[in-house]
Length: 413
Image 1 (cartoon, rainbow, N blue to C red):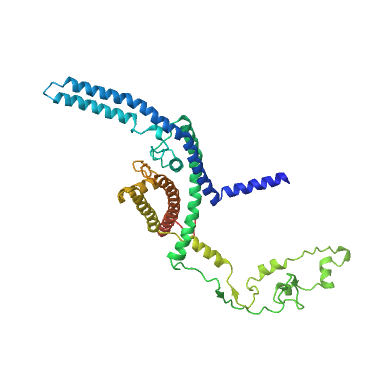
Image 2: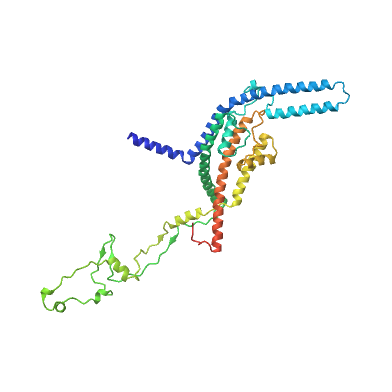
């Protein structure tokens, strides 16, 4: 009993994990776990990178100041200042290029994590946003792992997370497509889709009275033989057997009589072969329509497809809503916000425009979390729209094929 109980428990767990709720839950938990993992691997390294950049920047800065003082001293008595200007400009351009290459922004590395100090890019909201962009294949690139273990874990995380994300999107996309198709059929169509009346009564004409002597079957299925044999069948033409007729067959010797083998006759097959004109007995009462109407109704509902214009309006509406939302948060103009939403939902992910990068804003961390939620819901909406568009395109292709005579009208494949 213990082994069977464990097997049943494991079966129920696997069944739940691969259900609609289970797949969505696994994706959410996978992203949350990825946020904690990458925060642990990269957060301390971010501060260490700040120290390393500062150590490389300070000697270069001191050397540039020394060279500038030397140029000013050498040209102190020279009335022509053009040579000194050219030399100072060269030194400043070299300092600028080296500063960009080093990547030090002048932050106080010891104040990381403090209220007035620099903010971590690899905080949990930032790591969560990074995890979502990895498994959704968007990949902005505004932050990337720098450590050996961070990059190794990122590879393994993507190998497991991308198939899980695709499986979840395919699953939830079909469910959302069915829900949207149902809403479109019930609300948007306003009952325009034709449905059959399940209470339709079909009047069946009564058949003529069966001829007397016909063989019948009772309620139990047994054959009832009438008292008078049916004279209209071929049995009436068979001559009766008499002693005189038997003499002709046996030459007058009773010993020469051959045994006769009696073969039972299948009455049902006889009636179907010899009486095709007789209709089957039916009741004279009116009969309700059978379950074929239910099957036709289900078939009619399955044939309902959502027009491409409706799905395009849904996608445009989601992009417009995101543009308004991020425009209010980030103070972007409408084009920049719409550009970010389109690049995100199409999984292009240039990374030139990313929310939550203004760390002076106290709401930057919350914006990263809401941005991750927007990406997850947007991918599900896109999956739903792609499923609806696929059904509509297939239906249109079938219609064109039927009009051209390439496909049969009754061909459902």
